[in-house]
Image (cartoon, rainbow, N blue to C red; front, side, top):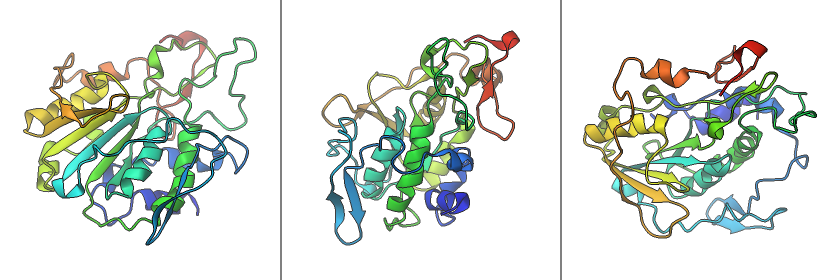
Length: 285
């Protein structure tokens, strides 16, 4: 499949949620390493129509891709999911939950390190790119073959996929490094009114740990809560069902300066998405 075909698998025209899917990473699918040149993200199961998930042998151990999914609400509950998980884990879990009837909506907005550039700086020993997105790119490319075999209905409830490492985890950027840190905005998600119009009455935020969402995501979820959308939190590192979550009011919440403040120090790529080289005069975290 070419780039357009792959994006169509993840964002089909038949789904009303596809308008929010981000095409940024799909534009760089030619950078996804060929089969066998990177460790596979441990695809332990294969989706076979009429048979479901069939366990297969994996090349690498996969401690982070085996989940207890007993907490997942049935799609008949008309719940939306927000997976804020590190790296490719959101894609992998998203494919598992797609088999349960949820429509994955990739919101990855960071540009990968340009092709041909060494991933590690030979002098500093640091990764050149602030955020490693090639594993996500590889998972999206390989996952399209699986997702294409899952017969999701057009009105399947949404499951928004985010990279929990998108903000660079406090990294201070140095000259000649590739700054592809990113944030999400309220405009990257449907409004509470749109969710309600699609019968979505509550949302489950899925993350590894922590009692509150990341700051950028908090602006989104707080708006939904204020409009009457119930929010629950599921921490994958903690057994048990989701628990009610009251999102704390973020700094500058609702202010016209929110977008400018969120973008402070971040770099947009020329073709869209976040990612640009740091010059001597613009270094900093």
